[in-house]
Amino acid sequence: MALVFGSRGAPNKGITLMTATTNLHELTISDALRSLRRGDISAVELIQALLDRIAAVDGDLNAYLTVTEESALAQAAEADKRRAAGEDAPLLGVPLAIKDVLATRGVETTAGSKILKGFVPPYSATSVQKLQDAGAVILGKTNTDEFAMGSSTENSGYAPTRNPWDLERVPGGSSGGSAAAVAASEALGALGTDTGGSVRQPAALCGIVGLKPSYGRVSRYGLLAYGSSLDQVGTLTHTVEDTAILLNVIAGRDPLDSTSLDAPVPDYTQALIPDLKGMRVGLPAEYFIEGIQPEVEAAVRKAITQLETLGAQIVPISLPNTDKALPVYYLVATAEASANLARYDGIRFGYSAGADNMLENFRQTRGQGFGPEVKRRIMLGTYALSAGYYDAYYLKAQQVRTLLKRAWERAFEQVDVIVGPTTPSTAFRFGEKTDNPLEMYLADIFTVSLNLVGMCGINVPCGQDNNGLPIGLQICGPSLGEEAILRTAYAYEQSTSWHKQKPTL
Image (cartoon, rainbow, N blue to C red; front, side, top):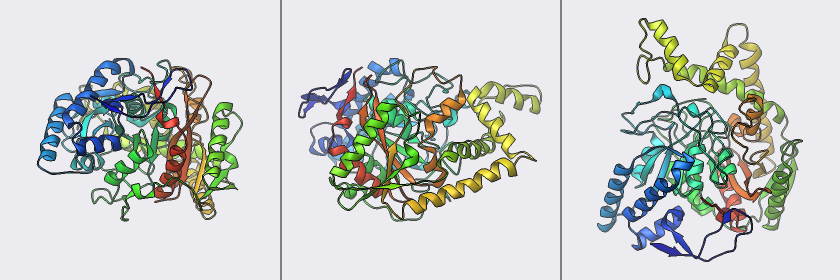
């Protein structure tokens, strides 16, 4: 079955816009909901179309680690039965994917690591459970850098995920599987997690919308922790409207997560208006640095001009200590990782080397089960927390983190949102940065600050480079400022056609 939309010509090589007929797997969440509610399609038809799409293209992409075909079709049949009985729910029958660092009851959850191969949790993460309670159909678990530690999904313990725009390039990370699945129309939307940019960066490299909510806006219960003061569950979708729909469902206080915020959840779709009159948009000098890919800077500056055309006031601002954000992040995150990953010891759950004594089993299990990037970050974090170095490294990093937070708070006294590039370059080739961890870490230079200060941000597509690879615009807001960034992102998106462009597979 195909649904009819307006047709457009493709402006760049390797790109196809929405054609005169759109296949079911190409629907947005909002379009799918309208079609399901009208009875134009059934949930079983929609889910089967997505499963067929996964079967057709995922052998090339490796976006999924697990596809739950049987349970997805059963959930779809139940959704159709509920709708036939006159029931409705915010996501009834909508097919979504889940990053494999979020626990899913009865479905293997590995965090992209061999140390958790075969681990089947007896509970679901709160964010996943909320989606299911809203009627969503879970298609499966998506690939990730091991324990979400990476910017390219090359660190997966199983296989790297490929970028749908160019199979020789990375999709970004660590939510690379979720981003690739959405970009390739293998899911209508997906959950990811963002510790230092792991939703926004792959969204930028794959040409889709990626939201990192404020710290505490979405429950972290059931998230296999990397950096507990930094991690946040986010969304990856085709459109800003779809992002608002998913955020409506997953946001809110959770008694199982003491860090979740007890604040009212507005209807985020009400913030989606097509103009920016009265909005003050901050432009930080520190986000246009030497070394940024020229096409990225040009596209972002053109997007900023478009925001001004839509009625926004552009305000030059400064974010002092931005150059310290990356080293601060890699001290705080690795320190928290060394503590969080101590639980994987070969005794309670997951892989065990089966050595004769406990200490040797502990050593062998972690040596064999963890990949090189996870080991690197555990060692960095353990060193930073060790006696004699704690004050010089970890404590100093937390002090600078406080200075960063104050600088962002002062900036938001002057403006409503802050904009800049999401990434310094478009998608890079496999192996291009793996031999130089520092160069890989620089891929997160524009995204880590928001995690350190606990504020919100969204990526929207804003252009392409000379190879037809997507470029992302990052829109940042204060804590609980999701309505402002969604409004800005929506107005920009609706005035351009970048979000309609899709990779050819």
